[in-house]
Length: 285
Image (cartoon, rainbow, N blue to C red; front, side, top):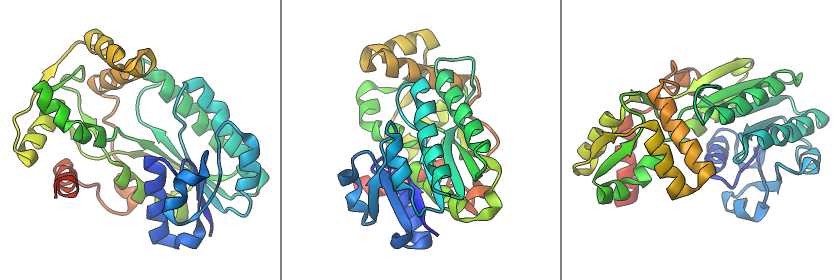
């Protein structure tokens, strides 16, 4: 069984490739990348896979049994035709199964909703493709918060507009182990999973970071408007608006769905504390 993974040079894509190599061997994993050279380090065959270039997928999906499509970045409306390029390439090449990394969240109600809505359209496109499929809706990654700990310490704590909202954080490594199983096991076909871990508040996140890193961070809630404006100033209008929408979504409970992770991965999701401890061991020795 040959399995292709799009965005193989990216953070989630490379993790999925590594998880699949453990399951089916490196000769059966094909990476697709816009710039193939950037994914050569994975030690597998890399083929061209530019989301904007339909011709790439007409040639690069030849001889592939299943393809894992990672949701594109960038403008939500551009994502839909980009994903259709891959779906069409899969159909033309007789690929049997599509696995899609979608996202949790609400398709209305905040400034992240257009991204969610575009993902829901791709879910429908995949379901109507005539191919077998399995869809995961990813929770929010915990890694950005862990990478930001130094900045949080510098700024005296965590500040955002999530308030008391619960976020069932996950990590790319956890997701990758689940997506590898979804790609190779038929029992997931026709199912949509919420790919999330343990739900925690921002107050609890600060407490767990304090416990593991022996620091003293506080969480300070902000209004959605103030936080979005602050993020726009720091990151620009497009990204700032999306980040503001994500934290507004946490506040509204959109990132705390029931978890299907164990069904997908065949094991429970790691606890938030375990993930933070592993991160510390890996980066601080």
